[in-house]
Image (cartoon, rainbow, N blue to C red; front, side):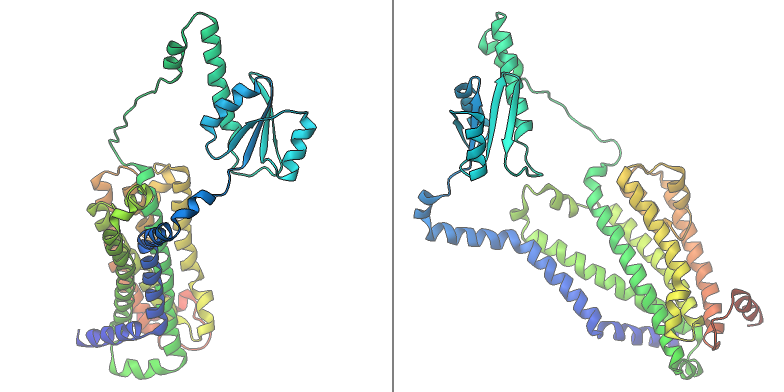
Length: 416
């Protein structure tokens, strides 16, 4: 235990004094600080602009021109003026060619040429992907046509307006989970889990392979138990990753609360920081257990590699298993269906359950006993994989030359 403590302290010191580790952490904290304080800073500059440029309101740029021509152009232009507030709507005279020329020359941005009350041609020079003018016009003209039909058949204008302006009232009561509300922070947490496990898992493997290839491992194992070395490296990397996540997300939460009044109305941002405590606990549990499983496997594989160049090839099967679980989660989040057989099976496989079961817990209602079974399997798997990885590590650190085959590793473990 004393050796483990020394190794853990040494590895943690390496992480927390590593310029890349500290730099990445500070970069993300700084970026989050800028984002969280942006509304406050923006409002400050807006106030300064308003106080120094009060007279400039008279020089506001004129609105783009929208032309209306054809049948009942005057009447339609009056109606459109109330619906197209971002345009200066004008009733146009002249031929269609004249209207086209005004649009091409830039004198007008677009035009509606009415053939009859329910048909028109929309002219625009460059059609934007965000152009919603025809959709708005369709709704306005349809309401006008219906009102005209009602009035023509003996219904008063007031009654027709009351019918057309009637609003449907509804209330939604969610008995389970609101996927739309939970989607954003689920996505961010899954991505964070994905990046941290792959990044720190491979760092463990690289550190072990580096020490082994430089022959430093031979000196280390003479003064320290290989198992203590492996567990020290794994726990240190898990702690470093956890500290980094807490620093980044903790600063985001702190700065959001400081500027909370400036984010009112931003429902997506508010929902991100309104994560229920029970879901946060589940995230921490699945993060720690999932990280330990993969870190143990990465360290075991790293101990069998004699050269740093062999690491990428050696860890590929582990990475593929992890990526498979990530893909399953992403596909389910895209479809919104977390009740498929594949998802349920992956919820109990220890290599995929850290992400899959966590996503299920957040995005849908999962019985408590299923969550308990998944966590129990994960804990048992962490212990089992930890024991096996420790045996592989003890044997692997002394194997040099070409990467050993699985059968050779198994034989060596049995003799150990």
